[in-house]
Image (tube, rainbow, N blue to C red; front, side, top):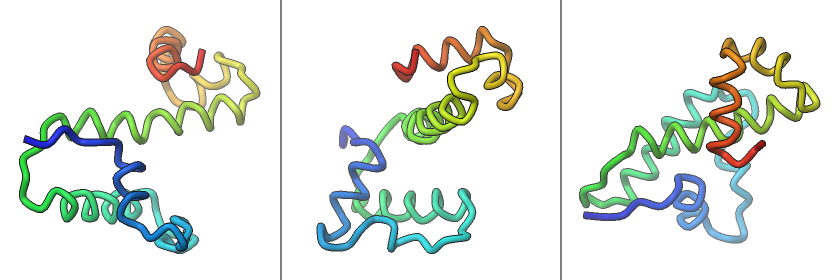
Length: 102
């Protein structure tokens, strides 16, 4: 069984160092398309080996930058962030602590 690394680290390890990651995804692509392509690369990297906790891995890879970006956008205002995200403030604070953003 393979202990998986973060998706970003895995993708970066498969992309030649001379090619910026941004060239793999064209501007205007949806988040869904980017996730699908990244998962295809991840599965190819596994080469049939078994992995676990993929759901938690993907959530953490998406949630962390989501919360960081939202907090930057609202200039640290948790009330605005919770409203923007559709979460109550308690859940927001829990997630911010989880990702060391608080």
